[in-house]
Image (cartoon, rainbow, N blue to C red; front, side):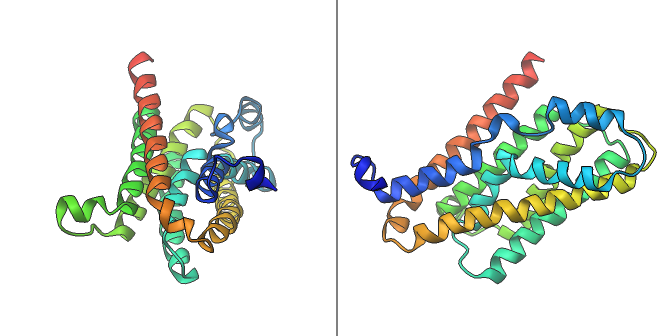
Length: 234
């Protein structure tokens, strides 16, 4: 019924749009909301459950992280491969999140987020085979996933640093938050995999894979433009 109700939209295009919309539908809720920010600033001591919840909420609503993950798993079919790449991203994300906040490493949030947008563009071009055509070889995709994971984690660290968290229980809360991030990542990944697995069963997947990654690349460039605009305007 869904396909019949929108005859101008091919099945492949529909799956493509649903995949990207699911990843970006919560774009305006990205990061830490004003209400959550106020709560974080008011509490002190170890608060494991609340910080796990906040971490999971951040990842599930983190459109930039989800867009990157869509690109990472787009052509991964084996569960072992998905596990390796998602683990590399998690290692990078977790490392800079914990280290960046705990040691209060300064950085401009706009520039870091622009690099995060670049990670989406990079992965989309990788999926389109651009580097093999331009460079004559395939860059190490595992290394790229780990490196961009470091920037994704540092991006959140720059935001949390502005909240002036209590030193009492800081490390415990950061670990709890990071655990929540990984839980949220698994939940989001599960949803993305369901949708992309359904799409892969149809011939339209390969027919529209290039178009899907073109949309992904466009979303990445949009993120870069928004962050650079914020950097120069701020």
